[in-house]
Image (cartoon, rainbow, N blue to C red; front, side, top):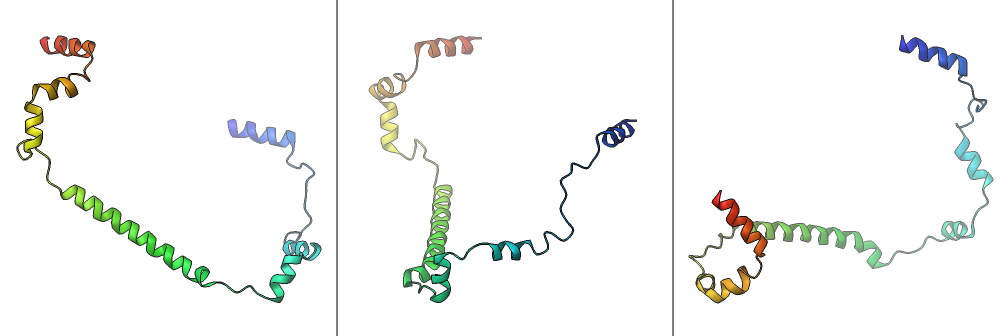
Length: 128
């Protein structure tokens, strides 16, 4: 029933807005547009003598591509190094073991970051 209703609305409103294009108008539109535009000064200069490219302009895409591949290789090398490194444990690191064993280290770096409200919350949650 809804499709019948929408068709009747389109029939009542009409589909023609008065904006029409003659047949074949866009077939040679680009050629007609190019013929109607004036030739610019830079177009005449470029057509008469093409500019020579410098060595850098010739080599630049290859240098950029090499840099991109080196960057990808470097990232893969770093990811491989990070993923294959052994985990840092306190048993294997004597400096870290001494630091954690020191009361001043605990007071200065660990307890200093803890808020008293957080500590009370932790004590309350642990007791329940």
